[in-house]
Every structure is written in structure tokens, then in C-alpha cells.
Image 1 (spheres, rainbow, N blue to C red):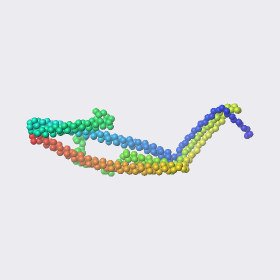
Image 2 (cartoon, helix red, strand yellow):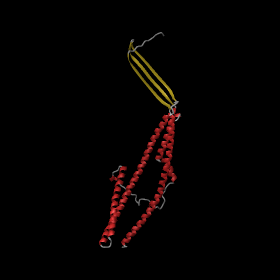
Image 3 (cartoon, rainbow, N blue to C red):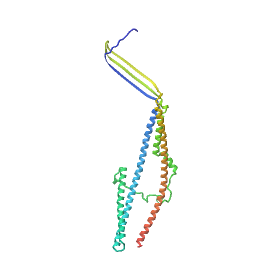
Image 4 (cartoon, rainbow, N blue to C red):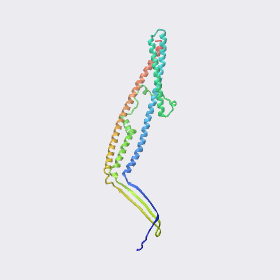
Length: 319
């Protein structure tokens, strides 16, 4: 008591450092953001599955486009061989005086028309194979296209003797509702919108954080009384409660916008579900009608084969 100290620093060095740490204890906004990140990660996987399915369907479609193009080219080539034989016969009979010149011109016109169709079919084959090569990444020369053979197919699928085993439509609709990637993606958007609403709600505006701070200040140098030094340290640990009182209507406006976006996402889910139900129903009916059409084509093929055999027999006996 009664003792005074005088400090004077004319030329000195000032040093200051500080360290602070904050750990959220209760922060609904951070929780909602974390859930949104998880949902986005899952949505990326769903988008990959959907893209994979789309490319599988496109590859299958392009493959059978190439098969159809090659089959059409082969049919036109066989027709051209027959028409050229008919043209030779028409020329011979015209030279013998058994056919008028108009028949010769008609046979030549049919041959020229089939030649043009054969060139167009060959171009279609090259285009189909090139498209399939672009999709698969394989060289055009490495592509081997093979049409489903009638011998390897079951009899029921060729001649339509029996109805194929097809599960009811309700089963496929339920399967679509649980596994369709497009519907899953829409539902993920709804979940994201719900988390956005939760993030902007009034309950999420209040946060509780654990805060710790430490710092020090030091001033040292020389002065009127010789060397001198001042040093101060600060330490603090506490809990901070943050409650926004008024934001000028910004939070309320953002909350209303998030609610409307949530309604939009739910409406898009229902729209997508309705479209997928219609597509599933259409595909289910197309599978049934396709089976019936395949049976009819099998019967037509059998009738054409019988007609061909009868024509060959008639030609053999001179009829």
C-alpha cells in the first residue's frame, strides 16, 4: 500500500494473439443442411441409376434397329434376285414373241426400283451400325447383330399357343412406385423442400453454442525507467444463446417461398406418378398385344411357307 510504479515505453514491440472456438449444441439449421447433403448424395445415385437404365434401353433399341435394317436389306436382296430372273425371262419371251414390250418395260422398272431400295436399305444398315457403335464404343467391324431365331424361341412365343406368364398390372404398378428412379428423384426433391422449410421455421432460428476464447497482449521495450513490459491474458468459456427478435420480414418471406416450393415438389411427384402409371399400363398392354401379334405373324409365316411349298410343287410338276 502507498507504493506507485511508473511505466514508460518509448520504443517497444506489441504482440497480440487470440484463439476462439465454437461448438453448436442446438442448431436446427445445421441439422437441416446436413440432411439436405445426405439427400443430394442419394439423389446423385438415383440419377446415375436412371441414366444407366436409359442407356440400356437406348442400346437395346439401337441394336434391334440394326437387326431390322439388316433383315430388310436381306429380303430386298432376295427379291432383287427373283425380279432379275423374271426380267431375263421377260426378255427371252419377248425375243420369242410370246410377251409384249410393255411386260419387258414393267419387269425392268421393277428391277430398277428394287435396286434403288436395296441401296437405301444398305445405307440404313450402315447408319444403324454406326449409331450402335457410337453408343457402345465398339468398332463397327466388331459388331455382330443376330436376330432372334424361330428355332430357339419357345413354341408359345412363336405360334401363340399359350399366354405368356405375365403378372397382374397391380403388381407392376406397386413395383414402379417403389423402384422407379424418376419417381425416387421427385420424392427426394420433396424431402429437400421439407428440410428447407424446417431450416427457415421459427423454432430453427434459435441456436445454442458452446464458446471458448483465449487471448493475450504483450508490450515490451525501453523507456524512461529502463526496460519495461506489460502483459495481459484473457480466458473465457461460456454458452451463447442466439434468438433473433426481428429480421424485417425476411425470414417470413423465405419461409413462405419454401412452403410454396414444397407444394410444387409434391405436385410434381403426383404428376410424375400419374405419367408413370400410364406408361406402365401402356407397356403392360403392349406386351399382351405384342404376344397376340407375334402369334398372328407366326400363323402367317406358316401359311406363307405352305404356299411356297405348293408353288414349288406346282413348278416341279409343270403347273
